Length: 263
Ligand code: SF4
Image (cartoon, rainbow, N blue to C red):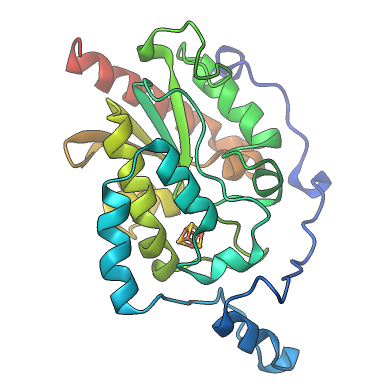
């Protein structure tokens, strides 16, 4: 199975470099974030800061996002300050791939490398994902102008567009604030199938906090588009024995799409 996926033997997670603590630039932090940063370290909350825009701002923000084109949406995500995660980003991680792709892969949240590159999935996770998708004849290497048929094209996105502080777990607030960007991406892309990779992708797409193990192995629905739940590449890198499950999920996704017939 590993040979078919083109996977090599991975190094144990212990060899991966540790992520440094984030350095928040006071000038860029929203007022609520700056106020918390000013507290002594012992008084700061350990969790991700939850900063919601005023209700009035939300009522104009959401309809605006729902009508944006690709360029407007990308710019809006890059400038977004709707939750506290904006304070820690170097780059917003919007998405990558051809807008004609039939496949949409939704990951969780940017890590250090994704934040630095502004790309969803980077480093070893991107390499593993690329190998997995190649095993079912898909490609994530192609740019928007690549001469690949849409059924082999993949668009990559993520549940959150900004990097959470290392060691923190983004909550429902951040996912809720960021969901309009992903929702609009899906409206514009009109994928034929979605792979939800990891807990945050599942939570934002399906609104479910059930363990992935209970959601894998069947076809879910996001506004008429089939969704297959699977494991995140970063998780697979730490749990080598789980790759067989990911392979099962990919096979289910491929069979589901084939079952839909021609577009
Ligand atoms: S994570 Fe999403 S909602 Fe939060 S600041 Fe970034 S783009 Fe905005």
